[in-house]
Amino acid sequence: MKTTTSIYAEKAKFIYDMEYKLAELKPEDIAAGNKADINFLSEQCPYLFGSGVYKARTLRGLYEDGVDYNDKVICQSAGYFKKEQGTATDDEMPLLQTQIGEFDLVSNPVSHTLRYKYLLPDNIKARIEIFDNLGKLVYSQENISGQALSQLSVASHPAGIFHIRIVAENGFTKSINYLKN
Image (cartoon, rainbow, N blue to C red; front, side, top):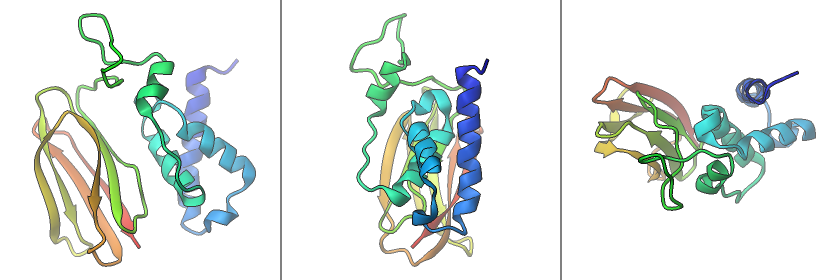
């Protein structure tokens, strides 16, 4: 019998495989069965199932506009909350606090607005940097902390491949390439 975790791991692997295939496909070429899997994973709690959820949301955005995800509601219904002294309130953002950090893109490729999500342990500061394909720093934001779903206008950037990186004072660093249309 498959466990819930193994089912989600299979779905996350499917999403990673689809990302590579999409480099050659158009959104209309994604099969209906694949869309069902992508939709299912995109509607899960990202704090429980990780970056595969965000990747699924990015893929879903290629063929379905206007989907809004309320992670607070999704994660609360799955039973995941940020707890303080053993209790959780409706005002607390649900999360599983990591010891190192998390960072992922919510939108890729982008045309006008780059959306990204980060989660850092308490009292840890970081910076976000964006480099063009020649390695030139085109954006930097210092002293970010906590968690956020952020967006940044990239409308003035030329089309091409860019590199976004988070560097935290606890040593956590993650870099992701994205395509600006």
